Image 1 (tube, one colour):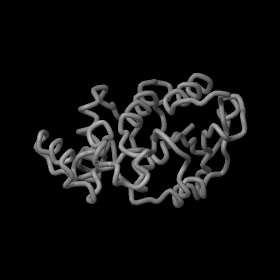
Image 2 (spheres, rainbow, N blue to C red; image 1 turned 120 degrees about the vertical axis):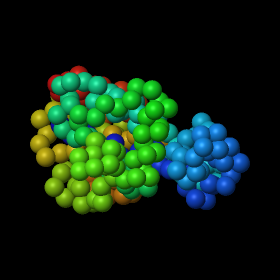
Image 3 (cartoon, rainbow, N blue to C red; image 1 turned 90 degrees about the vertical axis):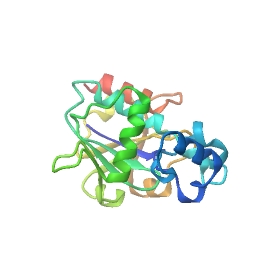
Image 4 (cartoon, helix red, strand yellow; image 1 turned 120 degrees about the horizontal axis):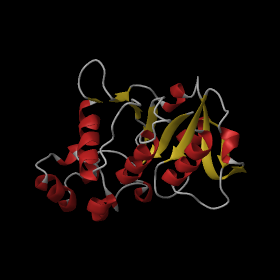
Length: 209
């Protein structure tokens, strides 16, 4: 089973708000350029009001929790994890990667990744921004979305799916983007109640491994 976090609320501060006082203040405090810091609603709330779909962005903590959930289980650490971001980047995460449990260290790691394109530098990076699009990625791998509006099935029903990517929305509010919906093969719900992203991952991992 391969996981992809879709529409992930993970991106650097966009240029249109890079000069906002809240953004500049945080960047100076960390001795970094504003455009090289992660967008985070807890720090940039006032600035983000000007952004399109602001309710769906600036939550790197969701990705952090999801990666810890997947990669902390030794049985799951077999296949790479993929991240599709709000701004349509595809990130490959090697299954041997040790994601920092400390959130601030995670933020620094992802900032370096998004600025440099890979971490560490060299021929065998553990995290890498690929040049692929989601459409290209799903040509060989059918995208199955976990969707509260999808057909209700037991988690075990997804365990035997072959050549599929299990897509989990790693954002706080709203529906999947048109980009994601246009390439999805199926949508399933694995609970009668709404689950947060890491909770859905926990259920799948518990039933499939």
